[in-house]
Length: 79
Image 1 (cartoon, helix red, strand yellow):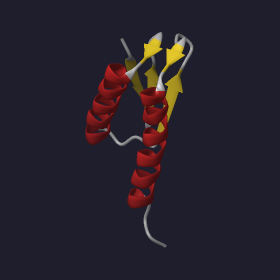
Image 2 (cartoon, one colour):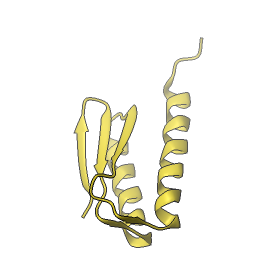
Image 3 (cartoon, rainbow, N blue to C red):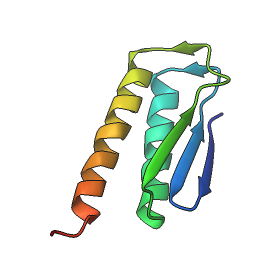
Image 4 (spheres, one colour):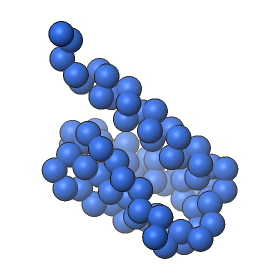
C-alpha cells in the first residue's frame, strides 16, 4: 500500500514493493486529489521498498513529472 506524506509544499509518495497498473492508477488518483486540496511544488518518490515496477509505474513517474511542471508553469506569476 502506497503511503502519502506532505510537508510544506512537498508531497512524498512511498511506493510499495510492487508497482503495477492498479497501484499506478491508485497513486495517480490519490496524488491528484491531494494536489487539488494542497499547493504542491515538489513531489518525491521513495523507492526504498520497491522491488518491481512495470511500464505503468514508469508512466506514473513520467506523467507526475510532466503534470508538476505544467502546474508550476501555470502558477508562476508572469513577469
